[in-house]
Image (cartoon, rainbow, N blue to C red; front, side, top):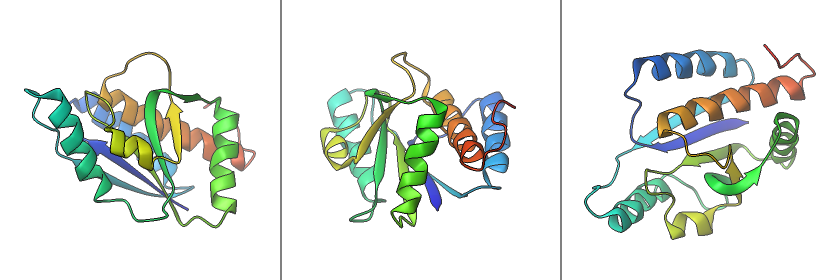
Length: 153
């Protein structure tokens, strides 16, 4: 299965970029991984920024394609639960799962309506760069769990 991540903005911190590179390399042994970055909206108008970002994200999503939006109010999953969910998506014959990290102001209503699942990493707020790294890390661990490999390393 292809795991694709669409994220608003780019990674600016070198240490986060290095951690993401490490996780991408690890994940490549289990899934094909694709990443799309969309431009952040104009911060002078948060509602317009959120709407514009949502539109840019939705342009990259095909009809019928499963989409999981990362949202603080979404469902919290343990690593084994995430693994089970990802395996269920793959068993359903899904060729590509798209994960979405919205911008600073959150996900646009149209994007939330399109979501098949809302996944929460935590009720805490993270920098978007860190959220990207955490998503990569958790998808990697989920793949290890699915293959009955130790996932604590």
